[in-house]
Image (cartoon, rainbow, N blue to C red):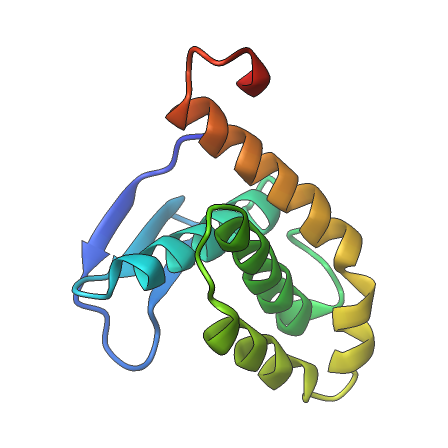
Amino acid sequence: MIQIPVEFDDIAGGAKGYYSPGEHRIAIKAGMAADQTAKTLVHEFTHSLLHNVDSDNKGKTRGQIEAEAEAEGTAFVVASYFGLDTSNYSFGYVAGWASQDGGTELVRSIGTTIQRTAHQVIAALEAYLHPDSKASA
């Protein structure tokens, strides 16, 4: 199981959370609805997997558009797997990044990363939720 500290903070502005690579920790805005908190946590956890200082992906030349679309796409897939419908938020979020210059092609190119990372996160969550299950091994 991958471990990273998570704190609930009074985050200013519109951000619902963030991943701090330098501190290797996640901050989540306090007081959100449970489904938004869960989705945001997966989004930031994806950043911790894909965009940390030791990651092969940290220096991607495609930049923030790809990073945000990867994180939100992964969060959407994981949330859907566990029965949370975040499409109202997730689709608009990714569409906003896709509207940036070159964003549409970048979003199209990251499907494999989203699929691989969602599988990794789902497997880790299933192992945590069902530690005695042979399927989680």
